[in-house]
Length: 160
Image (cartoon, rainbow, N blue to C red; front, top):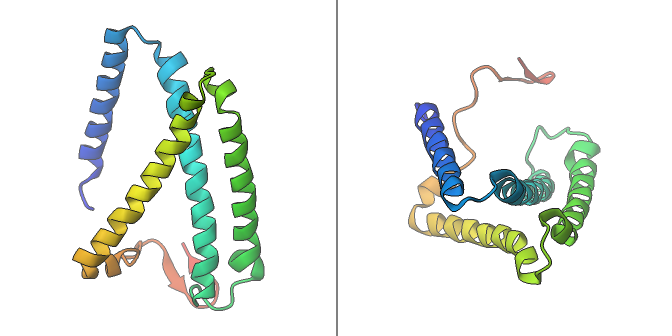
């Protein structure tokens, strides 16, 4: 969306000021508490997203996406390897949540994985809602205007 950069930056800065202000009011160490929890949550969320993208890539090429002459490593081997390694990393992080967060309660250890799972379920729910209520918008997802710098070139794929 054109012109979203400045408002998004202001919103992010405002949220950061509010969070730091709340930490100051509650006398909570933002590094020992907030930073570790949020960075751990972000790590799990990003890795789960990368695993999902790897899996989606395999389906994309199986449905005929791409240039039609993409090598096996691009179509299948790379994404499958990425999904396997990414899943292993997510498992290692989740298993070691207690040590990472400095908690002993099983409930606290489960907070981040449960929040990531809830976010995924909410995303799928919202996507189904958009598909049902606004099928034209849903069909347009991923079909945005191409970047004017990247122009398809039939001989080499893309040129800059």
